[in-house]
Length: 330
Image (cartoon, rainbow, N blue to C red; front, side, top):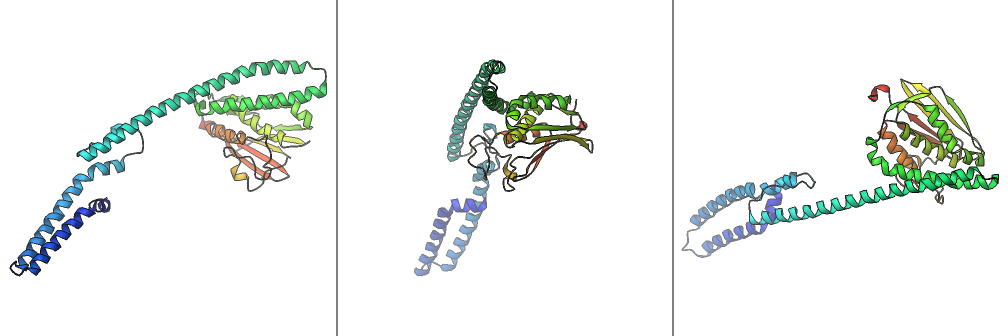
């Protein structure tokens, strides 16, 4: 702050020094003026000027030192009290700009809330005809057309479900209910939803649940399993998807393993990034890059550790490590 103060006042300091040199120069040229006396006067002037700068530094930088230490927020109460006309100008400008930013932020927040509510309402409205469509598909006689139509219906259903949960994630703490649940029930329900797609692709499931119960939130855990199973089916050809659970160090481990196309090693660190799809299969227009990103966010809120192992062309292995019972208050 001292350096900044001196740089700010450099013109005044140079002017003072110039005047002192001018006085000495005149006394040197004019022999009637005693040079020693002028040196003495200049010395006293310098001493007084240094004291003056010290006092002014303490007074003039107090306001700006407070600004420098102030946290970068919109709290006007943390603004320092101005002591000079220029400081009043700075304080007034900051207050005006902060009030405008607050108003704009409030307006944008309300606008986003309105758009979110409208989108959620629209998703719920669309789910009604989708349910009716599914019932009509169940009555279709043409099995080949039925399979194709059911697959397209399932894609729409999963995309809407992903959008619905994406809008709820920022507020999911208000919606979490931790309980002991049957892992098999949730898993089989999600597999049943994907049944028509699995039949079309010739994919089966090998289930081995050594541990059948976990402590978590049923709705959000179902969302995690839905995303992982959907990816496993989507990127696999005719093969079995292996799902197994076990217990290690009082923690339940759930593994979902497929024999699909796998993930390139250079892509593995980025698969949970928002919007990331792939660098090896970049023409995959069906991928949104949101599924695993949302899965990771939900898993963190449920204290579930999610890891992945994969090899290009040999499949992918997702591991869910559930928290210990003591990590939740039931």
